[in-house]
Length: 465
Image 1 (spheres, rainbow, N blue to C red):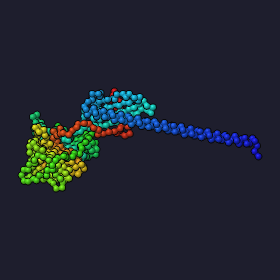
Image 2 (spheres, rainbow, N blue to C red; image 1 turned 90 degrees about the vertical axis):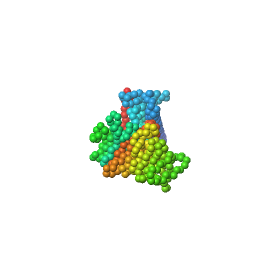
Image 3 (cartoon, helix red, strand yellow; image 1 turned 90 degrees about the horizontal axis):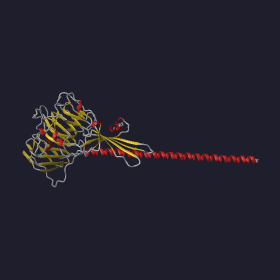
């Protein structure tokens, strides 16, 4: 039998256990509550910091926008010249809010076609800590449709007597002796690709008197090929190769809205005069083929436009002559074959009509699928033309044996293959063609965060000292 003392001890033990359990539960709830508040505070700081990082990123982007606007309006008066004129700096005015917001912007090589912008957005003074975003943006500007020389995603030469150089039709015929005793040749032409791949330009045994520009890849050379200056025409000059080329050639569409469909002309023996107007050819059955004995003439001061759709065929052989002030504009989504003497008698700039020889015959490839159309120049063709076909394969074959073909003008294409004895002469006068907005736009963009060698941060503050 339990005594009174035993009963008291048992009740006291039970009360102590209940108190201990209550204390443990209170402590557990306290730990959980403290953990919750700690987690909530951490999440708040993380969310706030994420918000501030986004805001600093937006500030940095605003700095890039300011740089592009200043360049496009040709107004850097609010900027400070730095680094001996190699850079311009700008800092946004202070923000009136409680936080300190700063935007620091640097433009390098502002007068070039490919300036680089560094923009830093900084937010400081918040309990979550200071944050910063740093951007590097490469810019380029629109080029004239003819301000390119020879450009394609891939360019390869399989010929052995190929020369690629530049002249200016405003100074006369290619190679003509000028009044100062020099010839109408220059070594400023560019053979270009925006590709990053090595070998995208395969020079083979061609002689390029000018420059090679790639998006980063090394060009290939044959044992007799190279890039030269006219001053040292026998010495390959690697300094004439650059690796920062950007391309922005947009697809082109045939003009629309003509009121009437004009059926294609039927060519007969002799001289066929194309009348001023627009000819629309449909691939269901239309074609134009000029051969030896079926010559074509575009009369003086007339404009003939050929619009070929759905694979309508066009073969230009024999002779095609375009008289003073005349133009032949071809828009096609199909294949073209060109041989013979095509606009070849036009070698000098027409100052009255304000036309370069190659502008008299302009060929626009409208097929939007890369490699889906072919423009073939063959049979020792002698041609003055401007070819803008950013999705087309262009074949330049300069005859065989002693036959030499040439193209005076410019080519923009998807893939260019050169064969035989071909001479390519870029006419510098084409650099002033229309359709140029001349505005800068972003072509490369990177956040500098030190995660890779390519995104290593720079000391942007050095430009502001």
